[in-house]
Structure formats: C-alpha cells, structure tokens
Length: 219
Image (cartoon, rainbow, N blue to C red; front, side):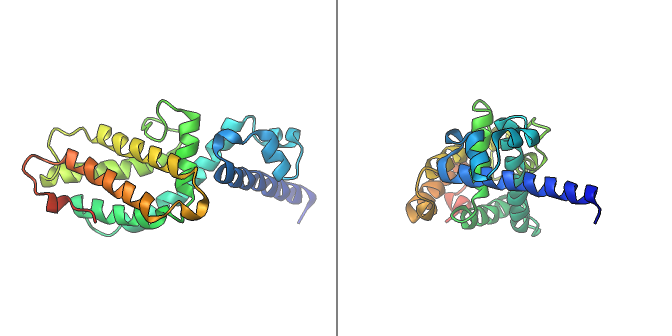
C-alpha cells in the first residue's frame, strides 16, 4: 500500500472514529448535552482536528442520524418484505418495532438528533431530500397506511401523509422520554405498554367508522 492510500485509509478510520464517539456520547448523555469539545476529547483528538472533518456539530449529527436510519431501515425491511399488506403488514411491522425498541439504540439516535436539528419538523419532515434512509422509513409507513385505506380498514378521507407524521411525532416524544432513562430500563414493560396503548389509540382514530376493534387489536 502506497503512502497516499495509507493516508486516505487513516482519514476514513479517523472520521469513522469521530462519528462513533459522537454516537456513544449522544446515547449516554443526550444530544443537547454533547458538544464538539466532548467529541474531540473522547476521540482523543484536538477540536481543530474534528473540525477538519466536520464543519459543525449539526453536520456531524446529520451523518450519524443518516447512518442510524440506514441500519433501522434495514431492520424494518425484514418485517416489511414478507408479502403482507395493509393492516396485517402494519401489525407485523409494529411487532418488529417493539422487538427492536429496547435493544436498538438507532431509534434513540434518529429521534433525538432529528428533534435537535429541527424541532419544528423533526423526523416527520417528509420533504427532506438530504436524508434518504429517513425518507425511506417514512415512505414505507405511509404506503402501509394507504393500503389500510384501500382495504377499507382506515377512513377513506384519512390523509396518509399527516397520519404518518402524527404516528412518528408521538413516537418521537415517547422515545425522547425513554432516552432519559437508564439504558437497561428503556425497554421495560412499562415503557412498552405506554407505546402499545398509544399506538392502539392512534390506529383506532384512523379507523373507518364501524370497524370492529378486534380487527385493529395490536396486542
């Protein structure tokens, strides 16, 4: 390996190390309590060196959010690429989401960072062309909601885009609260029950008039 190739590899490794340190600090202390100096210290680099790779904290956070969204989307695809449609797909996807919640820290990263970067339209900003994987997550959920309308389970006049935003806005708040708990109890039965009850109320609100609650049961 030549000198230029070695230097390029070292730059990539250092950049990845900075991103990983930032991710660990966000998970441990919350995004608002982490600054560039903290990240530099954890990575054992000068703050000036970190700024050579990332022009701002916001740029760095955007990158770790996109990577977290990529990993999350890959997990979601395991629960969505199964031939199920509509309400069956929604229930199956929900069960996968719950299984991942307690142990999948990327959820905390996505919601915390997006809320920090844009508190007005956090993860629900569906026009954000910069975040391919976040938009893929949103699009997948919206498609399932559209299928539920086609099946006659959800109200035909339900705005699928607004419904998707509502679901994720509420979940962002649940995850935000959970992220302040010790890591080992974030997936506790009490937190999971809160999420299940909240989601159950939401989809009943989306339902077409006269639909039996048993069809919408997600437990």
